[in-house]
Length: 120
Length: 113
Image (cartoon, rainbow over all chains, first blue to last red; front, side, top):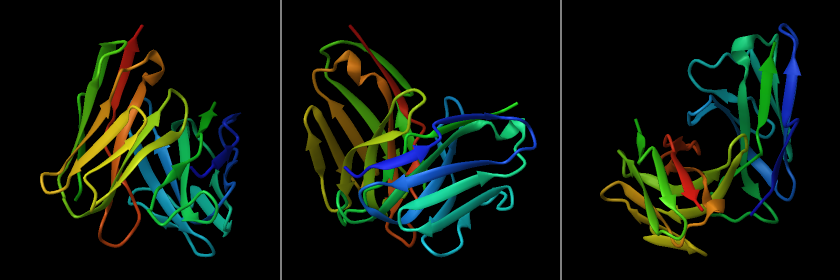
């Protein structure tokens, strides 16, 4: 299957700082990327959908000024948690769908390894 | 609104046993259904994808079935191994506009040696 890479895999920061998480599609062009948040022992909660070159669409209840998403190229999307606070500590996972090597037109979704954010 | 339910929430079996994980969804208007595996602290690994027009998909010891009309899917794991221990998630993609998936809560599987 296609490869989606996330970086960093974990990050610890002080309250009030901003943290950027990158999501890259390594062997295909990701026309659409999704950002999820996962709390312990729970399933994934979709935060936003981003299409290359356009503004992200945020789910209800997700603050777009808090969670900045940029999908400037077909292989890279970034999630920036601005002025992070302890309640933002979570596991963030991106996924991607697109075309190119490793992809098909089945609509299969591929996920990154996730990024664990801990805000002190 | 689509709702996805997975039963059981947790399952513990001895090594070598065949097992079935269940997934049900409330809206049968789906584009596809995907089964994932998640290891602790890791992302999701796609296991099987079933299109709405398909009845089943197989990969190695895994077999997934889909009964769209009744809103059910099963994931069958043959000859389970300790390395199969993980959380298994099913997710459905709607046939209407948009690509967003709706996930179940997952089944946490433990295979004991």
